[in-house]
Length: 316
Image 1 (cartoon, one colour):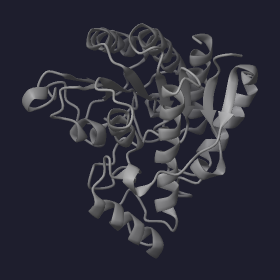
Image 2: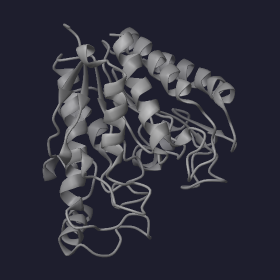
Image 3: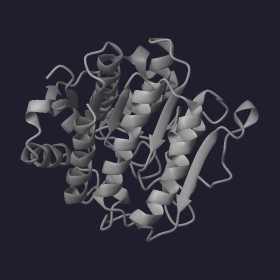
């Protein structure tokens, strides 16, 4: 096939996780890849290997002081990198750097024309701020990738789209005053779920006021409510005319996730992915990558992420 979908697979990104009984276990990678294999999409997929981000690449988004802290605590292998969600396990610096590097590898592959779409399952660590860890997220691969697209590929209008149940606060506040960063996020209302942010009134600050879109949904919101919210996202993206789209497709927004309260089915993820393919073809020369994000019901994440890849394949 002349234009395959790239899917990243390997022990380096599989290693990102915190073990039992932590919700973000290292089994998530293999659960997804088993489901993907059963979908029999292999002739249209090219499997790609992870790579590690350099410290210079991490510093595109994160502060040197924070990177040093993670490196030191990873060697010590004890304590937490935040207030209690993200353990400083031995080796977590390397595993988190592998997640970032693999997302950057997907960006490079798409920008260099190897494919129009790529998917990285263990990625989309959207809570990490520029100077701290948060919510199971050590380094924010999406934040680094957004800066990388600007600094290394010369793009100015990059879109970040997030349908994880949790608000992508690390990305939002990392670019809250940046009018050129296109941000759209559908999530469970922060009054009921971590991190407590992402109200519809949060549209950016300073010169960026009015340039960001947050769409909070009430607990129990289903596919019908998602479709209504998604229409806002589609119109916003179409008007913004991005040059590249990063899609954080967390599966914790599906019904039955153990730590969230939305009730989407995997069809929501399939429909969102298909729409983003159309918008990418219209505005971005097809350039779109997906990152797995959250999801703690293993069956849900396997099905949702597989449907995203399938939508990418069908639009190729």
